[in-house]
Length: 164
Image 1: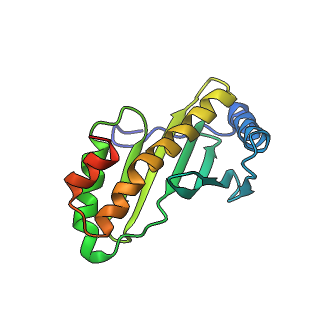
Image 2: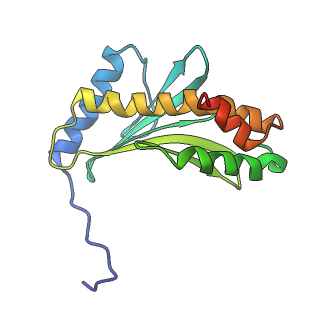
């Protein structure tokens, strides 16, 4: 194998399979009413006071990774994409955990959190923390994104979203 070739991914790890079962159990126990969304993924809805959106949680079983994301229900029209990209870039700059991303081609914005649990059992608490991170990001920054789509300045929308 040369230096430029990636190392082969390990195959079938029981820890990853247990993590999938843990994730499904906690989503059911916590009342999320998860729906299957692929072989190792679930979709579930968050209906909050400031924002409502769907979340997706995926366990990459062989890699022992948990990925949680939420797609903003607001799709950005082409004319507002440069301003939305500025908003997302500025908002994501100071984040400690999780990330915001924006697809310039489709106008889709997402909040995302990944967790590498390789070699450790995925605990319900860690999975809940990843879910809570995505919810917190979306609830905080979605109103500002919506303001930018409506024509607001990205800096002003960000200051309002962050309470500055």
